Length: 403
Ligand SMILES: Cc1cc2nc3c(=O)[nH]c(=O)nc-3n(C[C@H](O)[C@H](O)[C@H](O)COP(=O)(O)OP(=O)(O)OC[C@H]3O[C@@H](n4cnc5c(N)ncnc54)[C@H](O)[C@@H]3O)c2cc1C
Image (cartoon, rainbow, N blue to C red; front, top):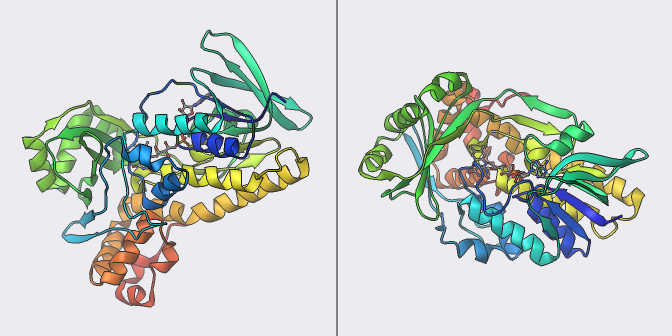
């Protein structure tokens, strides 16, 4: 074997996976199709559990040093109902952050290199090597256009929602739901906001203070995607005007500093997480609508889970097979709750339920705290539904989407 582990894709899932494997003493090759610094479509928000992982890994200081502000106050308004607060601290981390992705992703890649991983940029994996019934390596193109191969005990696909590795191993989707939203966002100067969320007749709007600007996004139901993309800028502005008039007034006095970006491809699925000689982390293995801002933290969690399960016995085939199976089981167990909650948040016709929930939550400081903790992933959804909340809720608010 040329390496112990080959990781394909070097952003939120791949770089931490490569870093943690390298810290375990393994020879790690990290292949990335693009080159850093480079951007990635995202509304940037990292919830407290994700920030806590950055701290534990020793990279939070570098992220904070980029100048992204601490986000320790959240406002959520749905029609006339409003709650304000912040999730509880995780391992002493009480703030969320929303660093620009061209900064965050470079810091993560540099952390992997500092741990000993070999990063090769502008290298795209195009095929897999196989030996017997297992994956044994990758075939990839070099920046020169020439082809190369590398062999390893484990190939990790961290190559995003449209993962090449997942396609090559034919990893089936084990859970799948239709797309629910489409999203557009851009950056503004001259706005003063908290992390703010608004929901109303024109969908969802959020304001996210980042390094040098405030990111304002508008989410629409998926059935409007064709209509919205016909005039995305107009639909975006109309949505903020209707759902968040005070934010819109600030935008009129401020300045849009970048072009609008967006996507309608907000897939919802779990893929088989691992097989003989391969594993998937991040969006490659599990993707959900970005409306609940969980993708980055989920990617960090999966990096921790995979490297934790594999541990220091990568070369032991029997142990590796067991470790990959337990990684797959734990990934699904830990991420199913937030997947279901995301489907509920992203369903337009569940708005009355969300409103009933928010109204009930707004009547009690304890429930408000539990609500923000649940949204951030600091505590499980089950701990939100206390007897007090159940008593306050109409039956409709308690139903959850079926798998
Ligand atoms: C509109 C939108 C808003 C979002 N907002 C948030 C948010 O506020 N908070 C949050 O937590 N999450 C958010 N997300 C989700 C988050 O961006 C993703 O979950 C996260 O980027 C996943 O990271 P990843 O490393 O798994 O995949 P990616 O970020 O997609 O990285 C995959 C990498 O693999 C590389 N790659 C692909 N194929 C190959 C190949 N064949 N060979 C080599 N390299 C390859 C790509 O170049 C890429 O760099 C948002 C997503 C969208 C679409």
